[in-house]
Image (cartoon, one colour):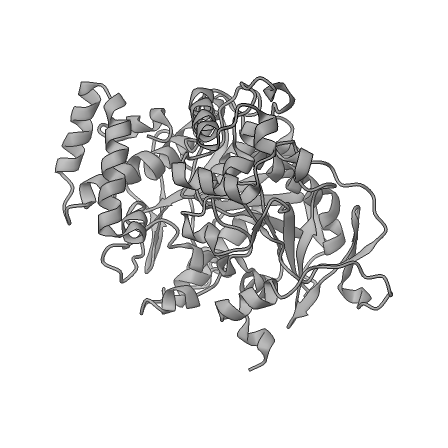
Length: 531
């Protein structure tokens, strides 16, 4: 098998291919013009793998956020007639070194780049575009993750174009600074990661036609913090002109903080670094900032600042903020078991004890009683009651509430519940387990001794693609991989229909069949956002 074909299934080879060099200007005119696309900020030359052309490391800003531009809003691109390689993935954003997914990649403040995958197969003049926003708790991850290489996805679905975007993370992307004596010059620092995403979407809107994409048919999709981003972006003024629908996997508008929390986190960082002003912080090396924030584990995330995000993000949906968008949202059956498995039992025990001490203390007695009642009914290993209640408060209840609020606001929402399990007795159907299905990377679950049913995987991807193409995920029998029609009902306030993505029986759930959220004992927790 050729090295190109190996890279489709070998994560190590894929990383080497993506990071095998640094993109450079092409000044001698020696390039394949069939692999070149002219954009506002230059002509970019990709590489072909079989019949898929990939463009890696395209800058979507005019200047990278380094030096004096650290903690400044992203800068628009400028017209450029240069010709540039788009062969290699750019460096990943600084985040939190304690989170393994971030520490796997080369990190730098020079990080605002995107990647594009397109098939040579001409299916239509304007192909629907899907823009992926990676997760990682707003503190880690990157487009370099081999899971997010989209060759397999586009090869199977040549009628779409896929873009993956990077954005500033952690203290570089979500650090509150305006309260400092010289902070008035940094009014956007608390939500820079989201502003980066908007700027990337603007670039896509203005340039994707050159790749064969339809700028008026763009779907956002993301998981975890990426899903939260997808659901928050409609609330940012002016952003909706760049997309018309979104898919949010295991994430919602609860993954935010208040300005008071933002100030408290910033002050802790300043104290550790012995800094008094933004000017002091600008002198601190990026690596040192990363190290300090990692030690503190001062979780940075989007801020409900009243400027870019409303003080109540759920209420914004209920008031119709996204009523003109079609949205598809959902969650996994055992979300927090991923964290139990990732932390290890000892690490989980320590983390959950600290979290409950800090956060459960704010609950009034009657609410504590409801939560304790819920936990007493949970069966399984000793960690399951805690895992279940945090699955509800962080992921499941907020997804259902978002569905409720979108319906109240007059918008369309399709909701799912993903149930297939890993063979890992702790992981089960944990957070992010569906990613290998969505991106068509069965090799990432094969090493666990378990691959999901192939027809199920193709069907789930088809649901996603059909939604991106048409605004509804329903499949007629003639396009459904299993030959059976899939009618996906809209979520409504009366029937609350949710599509169960069961490995061997995809079907709309009946309330008596599966109680996804405990309306009486856990649903109220989403009012605390990230409890």
